[in-house]
Length: 320
Image (cartoon, rainbow, N blue to C red; front, side, top):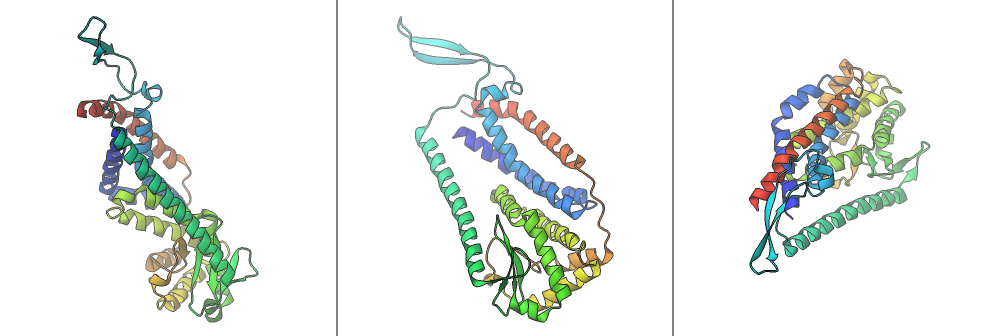
C-alpha cells in the first residue's frame, strides 16, 4: 500500500509539473508537423503515469533498483533471542523500502484496482457494442468500412476504440457535393488509421486525477489530431477544398446537439474549426522532423526516473 501511495504521489506531482510546463510544451510543438505533434504530445501526457508505474515497480523490486539506490543498512529488532531478550539484526544490501505490513490496506488497494479495471473493460465492451448497433442500423457504403446512417442530421464520425468504423448520414450526403463527401471520408479514414479514438481515451486515463487542470493540453491533442487528419485528406483533395468542406459541414452541423453524440467517436466538425480552416488555407504544415525529439524525450524521462528512485526509497522508509 505504501508503494501504491508513493506511485500515486509521484503521478500527481508529475501531472502538476506537466501543467506548469504547458506553455513550454505548446511552444515546443508549434513548429512540428501535426501528425508528429500529436504523437509527441500523446507520449508527453502518458509520461507521468508510466514514470510513476516504473518507479513503484522498481521500488518494490531490489533486483531492478540496485543500480540506482545507494547502499545503506538498517537495525532490525527480531523476535526473542535464544538466551532471552531481543536479538538485533543488521540488514544491509539491496532491498525494497521497509514498511509495515497492513493487510486490510493491501486488500483495499486490490479491490480499488479490480473495480477500476472492471469499469475500464466495461467501457471498452460498451463502445464495441455501440459500433455493432450503429452498423445494424446503417447501410454499407461503396467504400470499405464506411456506413450510411438513415438520419436527416448532417453528421460524419468515426466510432469505436478498435476496429473503428466510419459513419456518414444520409442527410449529409443529400446536402453536400460528392467532392465534399470525399474530403469528409478521407479525413475520417485518417482517424481510423491513426486509432485517434483509442489514443485520446488512453491519454485521458493517463491524466485522470488532473484532467481538469490539464484540459488545455488535451484540447491541444484534439486539435493536433484533427489537423493531422486534415493533412491526410489533402493527399486526395486540394487543401482549399478540404477547408471548404469543413466550413460547409460545420454550418449544417450547428443544429446537432452534443448530447446526441455517442461516446468513443471522432466527429468531422466538432471543434477547432477556425484553427483547422486557417491552417489549410495557409497550408504551411512543416515537414516531419523525424524521431529525434521522441528519443530525446524518452531519454530525459529515464534520467528523471533514475534520479527519483534513491530519494523516494529513503523517504518511504523515513515516513514509516
